[in-house]
Amino acid sequence: MPDPIIHEQPPTRLEQLLGHHRATFLVLLILIPLVCWSWIVVMARDMYGPMIGASAWMMTLRWDARHVVLLWAMWAVMMAGMMLPSASPLLLLYGAAARRSGGGAAAGASLRIYALAAGYVAVWALFSVAATMAQRILSMMLIVSPMMTLTSRVASAAVLALAGIYQLTPVKRACLHACQSPLSFMMHRWRAGSIGAFRMGVDHGIHCVGCCWALMLLLFVGGVMNLTVILAITLFVAIEKLLPFGATAARIGGVALISIAAWMLLLTP
Image 1 (tube, rainbow, N blue to C red):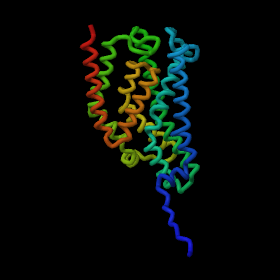
Image 2: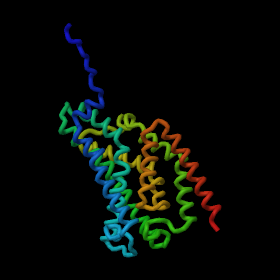
Image 3: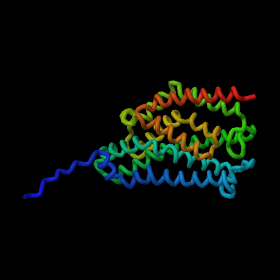
Image 4: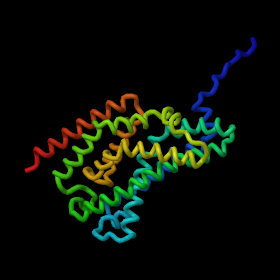
């Protein structure tokens, strides 16, 4: 009997895209976040362990240039590790569009994908400057301990309430919608070339910061280098941005944060 004819399924669009830009997405969505998380884990374990490594530099009352730069680097690496994977829908969709608009040149498309990611990460690096300044001010006011945790229950409740209220605002909804709709974002903000891709990354990063900045303040409540808190915020951000019920989760999270803040205030003597 003749061998049966086996019809292979054509590759999906995602498989085609990964075939063209596998190395690019491997670097952006796996390698860089993995390096960032490895550094975060090392820093966290040192801070809550022997405190003989780089974390010892940050647990100081001295605020010279070296300590400030190290603190900013900690925030920047943490933001890149937490937020870059959540931008994967935009990066993947842009990769397909960049290849088509560039006449099929894979090398040029990969360069524009890197430029898009660079713009996105640059915005979070600027946010890290603001976070570093905030930590500096709170430390001067003796509200943040050397372990990078708020020392006042009232201050912690205020941060929780602020984050919870922001979750319910129209600005949060608008920014979250932009993060959840990469196709719509690209249609309205498309720019050609590598510089255009970088500007698109900046635009998307601004919306992402607008969506998540208040959640990042929760790090001061649970501990900036507390791995459990970092993982919980990362997971919640991913749920908000990547799942269909993300907007509902954001509202539920907001109500929960406000409730926890009220409970903490009730317990304050």
